[in-house]
Amino acid sequence: MKNMPESTVRRFLFLFVCGVLLGAPGVARGAEPKILYQNNFEKAALDALPDGFLALEGDFKVKEAEGNKVLELPGAPAESFYGVLFGPVTNSGVGVSARIYGTGTKRRYPSFGVGLNGAGGYCLRISPGKQALEIYKGDELRTNAPFAWKSGAWTRLRLQVRAAGDQTWKVEGKAWAQGSDEPKEWMIAVEEKTAPASGRASVWGTPYSGTPIWFDDLTVTELGN
Image (cartoon, rainbow, N blue to C red; front, side):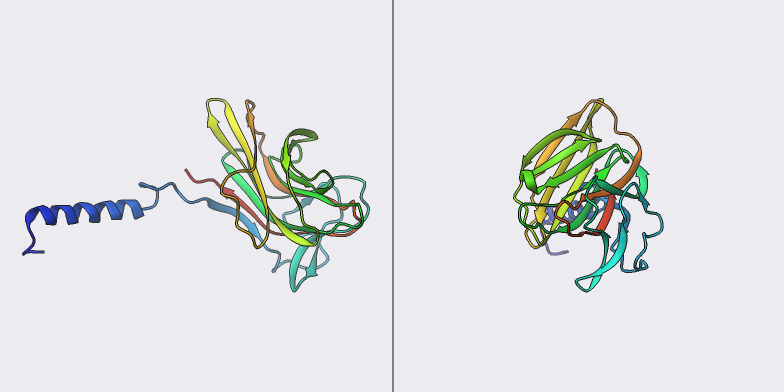
């Protein structure tokens, strides 16, 4: 650079420093989400509930499916919304994701979802019979949006809870068919004025169709800035 004009050298150094800062974690870019928990069941024993999982209701067990292992909720009975807790205790600034598989039979469809904040916390639920994507808090439906579910295919769900201001929290969710692009925007959201309770993440299902529901690739993340 010794033969360059001084102004060119200064510009080069300025752009170099900016590039370094933009590439430095936590400097100019928001921090990437930190994985707090992840499980694809490949190391789990078959025909048992993995260590660290707590079944609230339902006979959840690891099974072989499509050449890999999944957490299965059997197709019967279909008398409740069965759930299992996993991962660390969190409250806000976290997200949960999973992929879930179910099939419909005639006019009967499964219902399933992912949750945060424990058994009575928030749940992002797909209800194919209503063609809806829903957010529940405990047993209370908070909001819903249209959703076209495909039987016999994996569906990915993502739910997050975050602070959104002074005594305000946002609960946001999205769902999409595996193999398609993840929606850039949240498809459904609720604004809350009560702080979320501390609790573990969860997956839920009701096999109304009489066929098993499979859960895989469970992930809990701490949201980036």
